[in-house]
Image (cartoon, rainbow, N blue to C red; front, side):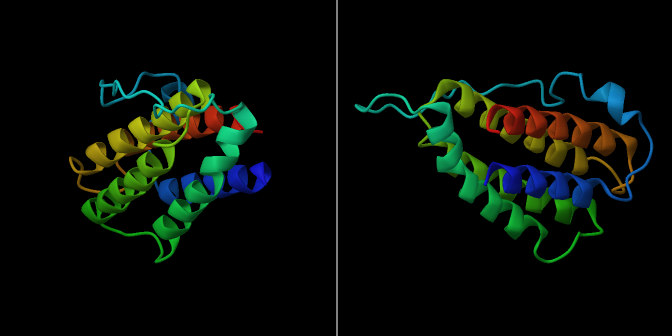
Length: 154
């Protein structure tokens, strides 16, 4: 099931970044978040023990797959603002899924994915086309976050 999520997230990245040009995505993947902000949210407080990594990954997997399906269902928007709106909705679904995660590592990994896609959406709101190098760089950072999450959860 984790392989399905990895494939799904890879397809999401390809769908979002296809047609984007410019910028060196490989070197930008190591750069810090473009948003420059981090949220101080912690895993959900609970009277039950923290989840194992496997339990936490399983708890968000279907939500992430569903959010990805929603994001890619109607094809790729051609306008930056429309893509930014979709990414913002996608991030909202991720936050919802992550709210109940009590495993610190998984919670942090999903939050990093949220933060990087939020930064990508913010970048899109300031560019004139989806082929802008700034969006390609933001997308590369988001893909790096997805890869880290996938590595943790595989």
